[in-house]
Amino acid sequence: LDTVAFSTSISACQKGGEWEKAMQLFAVMSQSKLEANTITFNAAISSCEKASHWERALWILTVMMQRRVQSTSITAGAAISACAKGGEWEKALKLLCSMLQRNLELGTITFNAALSACEKGK
Image (tube, rainbow, N blue to C red; front, side):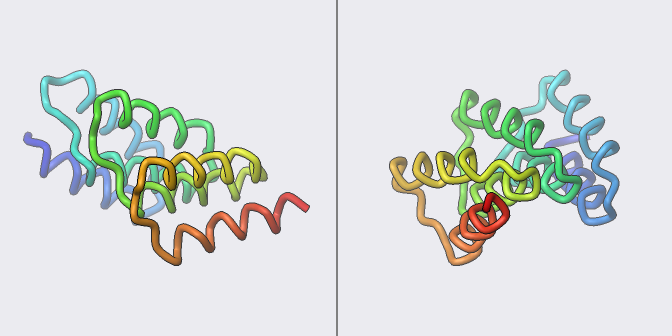
């Protein structure tokens, strides 16, 4: 298997609501010599977001940053949304600020996720 196959499989699990299988695939890939790319990390973070596992989403984001893999507005939106679903509005805003400081081009979806986090944090 290669990075594309793992990324596609993780994404399919994410879309099918199988976050645990997505995490298993991500772990297997991490233990192999294959390098995860932006698509791989985005799919893994999105899997956590859909399952409301904000802590794991932020852990994966940290690994992504440590490996210096380029994050995107999709990355930011999924991680912020995961925080929102977990009621972690302060973490969501901190993450938004961090992404803005890194000059990451963020879209409407990302800002809406941050607003949603604040609304849920009332």
